[in-house]
Length: 593
Ligand SMILES: [Zn+2]
Image (tube, rainbow, N blue to C red):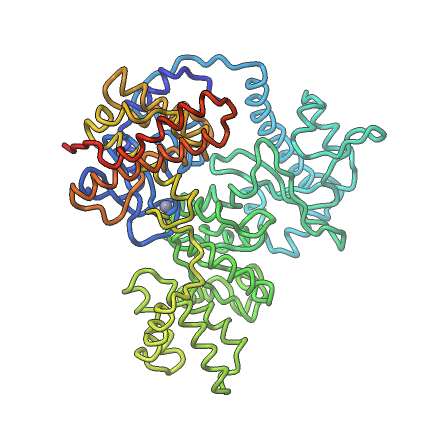
């Protein structure tokens, strides 16, 4: 939640020009009154991401991401509202006033740092247990079964939770932590009957650190055959699985051009020990979209080092499509005949030097997926062959960039000794049929040829956008239109702020309106409201006509809605009278400057 006054928030935004801030992350090129670049929030090659210096807003015509400078920093850096304000204030050299937190806010903020402390103490405790308890099972597992050195064990802070189910609790109580804090840390089971019981026991422990080296959670692998084999801390105030990666705090500072993405903690640690310090892994769940965007902050390329078995192949295909969507290019490292990278780098037969070669020979992700696809078809059978190439053509069609598509087409043609020309012919036939089923990204809708409701919303968006973009238009239209003519509560709210700013200041500052809305989904919708586009409106004459059409549409809808909901006969009479003027809206004088 926000601790800062609206004035402070506004000052922070005013002092951080959106073009400068976004320019730090995205290469922008001027086109007319806006700047354009490749959207950092979806994978594209066309540059639908726009930044408007006059509105101090950004908007993506591809995926609909949008907002002001604060929204951008929140979304891009994954900051909370407060963190974003503090970052931008710092950037502009503004001293923020000391914040007054409510009791609840204070508790939440304290609790997060208390969980960090609890986790840190816990990591120390497990590490001590690993090295010093009489029970040497954990230490022997790491040393003998996994071949880890004492130095590696120390660097990763690896530990051991022994057979007792009370030791950790007793240790932390002794350190002065309260029950309600311990309850939030996710390290204990609590029941009325038994009280607090350690969640992790009979397991070797992997502390999970975030990029700022806070211990945010633990993963534990059971000793022997128990279930589940791996157990992780639950989500807490300090731990979000999908927004972290194991080993990232080290990998990020290696300055390598790519990360090696593994399936397990042991793979990562083993690779680091073998000198591949750019290895990371997802945290006990499948690799996801948020993690891909997290990676993209540091590198543009990922080498997949998943298991060699069938499950590993499925996981690779899934990761490949997620990486592609995030605009990260991917390669697949072959660890066969070993089952995973850990076994590979520790094998006397292969080892790190051979692994370095496998990295150099890693297969392009797309070509890998085609090879996997091939297994489902009988290429000796002419029908099977045709169906296979049709599927391949469909996948090639998903490359938006022509050069890239052609390069891949040539590569695939080479792999299967078919001519590039015949493959291209198949792609073109598919394209003409419009069967681009692979491309499931949201498509920006414009114009009025959607259904009626979409058209209505589009008209309201265009009206707001034009009012703020076309100088002098507000003065010409204000007698015809009011905030009440907008349909949803959100649009009404925004429209009334736009009208108010016009009345009091003669101009609109869209970025400041945005600051009144905390919710990121609302901000996104408002950004859409300020950035509508109508295709194929080029001449001034056609624009004037479009403005009249839009005004007519919005107004008519407003009358219809009120008519439908009105029960007062007097009001209805008035409405009908007013509605008669509607036809005149098609001829109202509009002059553009
Ligand atoms: Zn986008």
